[in-house]
Amino acid sequence: QQQVKQSPQSLIVQKGGISIINCAYENTAFDYFPWYQQFPGKGPALLIAIRPDVSEKKEGRFTISFNKSAKQFSLHIMDSQPGDSATYFCAASISGNQFYFGTGTSLTVIP
Amino acid sequence: GAGVSQSPSNKVTEKGKDVELRCDPISGHTALYWYRQSLGQGLEFLIYFQGNSAPDKSGLPSDRFSAERTGGSVSTLTIQRTQQEDSAVYLCASSQSGLAGTGGEQFFGPGTRLTVL
Image (cartoon, rainbow over all chains, first blue to last red; front, side, top):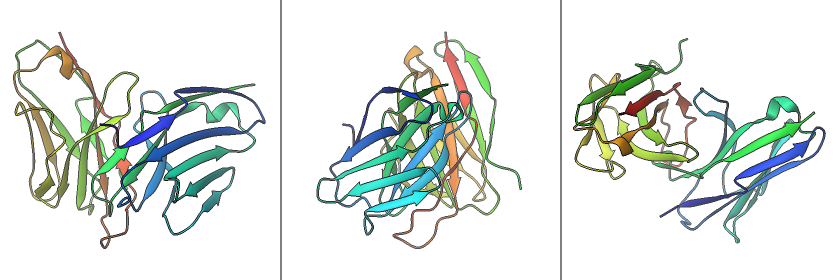
């Protein structure tokens, strides 16, 4: 049973465009929603995270939008660059204990 | 300081053999997590340690899988009688757990790629 559902599975974006990845969850006890970036051969690295008491968080070109009532959250990458090409995972956690990950989105930014 | 390290980086074994995978977390991190990442899949939670105890073992896929953590630091994931479906990348992460309700950042190791022939 997938606790966190992620889409799309893959995404191709032109350089300078906006990349949008979506995630949905069911468990309303989740209180921490991080996004991770993973390059081939490396472990995932935290990109940005949000808590359910805010609707949006922005760090540089990366923004999380959070819709508590819809139980959805999304990652927006503005001005996408070829160096952003990686696999992105959303996740959800209860009090930083067990983390549930989405299935990942492979992003390719075309120069 | 050093990040999370895992060894070996690659392990090839024959079906039916036992394997041990090691994780060295960041010094001072009390929480340690094991995940399994199959090709093209997300991260599958296996087990979580807080100090030396494992409050949540629900993710272990079968009784062939076990894990321990000693001294609140190094952890070993053991897979007995390996099967081909065990082939995957096994990732370890650690975090400096805060108070309940604060999700501490997880720092991941590079993983161990296990291939069962």
